Image (tube, rainbow, N blue to C red; front, side, top):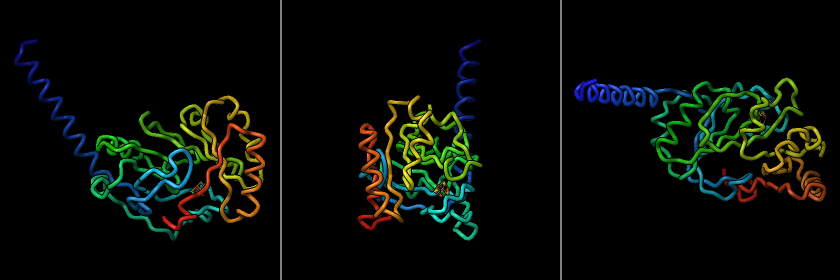
Length: 229
Ligand code: SF4
C-alpha cells in the first residue's frame, strides 16, 4: 500500500470515529431525574462528590423502593434526553447512574462510554436482574433483589463483574439467600444496609449480622441522615 493510500485510510478511519462519536451524543435515554454536586450516601464511595443520573423504569417491585418503583412507577417522571444534554450539566468527578434499574436501558453502554470519554469516573447501581456488557472501567454496585422477587434473579455474570455488593437488610435472612455467591467471591466488599423505613429494627439487626460476618461492612444511607438528595 502506498503512503498516500495509507494516509487516506487513516483519515477515513478518523472521520468514521468522529461521526460515530457525534451520533452517540444524540442517543436519547429515558431520564427520571438528574442532580449534581451531591455526595454518594451509600456503599464504597460514601462521602464522594458525585452527580446522579437516574434512569427511568424498573419492573422488580420492591415494596420499600425509595425511588418510587414499588408499583412500577407508571406516574413517575420520564423524559427522553440526549446524551450531550446530560454531559453538559455535569459538575462532579464521578457520575452515578442509577434508577430505577439502569440495565433495562439498551443505550446504557453508550451512556457509560460517553461519560468516560468526558473524563468522568462512572458508577452504576443495579439489582443485577438484567445483564449487558458495559465498559470494564465502570464501577458496579450490585444490590440484589432476587430474595424479594424471584421473578428477577440476579444474572450470574454480575457476581464476577461487580465491584461491591450492597444488601438491604430487612429480615436478616438476606445474607443466607446469597451465601453461595458471596462465598465464591470472598474478596468482594460486602455492605449491609439497614432498610430505612424500619431502621429501629434493621440497624440492630445489621450490627448483629456484622458480629457473625466481621469482614462485611455497615452502609448507612448518609444522604438521608444529613437531609440531602
Ligand atoms: Fe426500586 Fe431498586 Fe427494587 Fe427497582 S430494584 S423496585 S429501583 S429498589
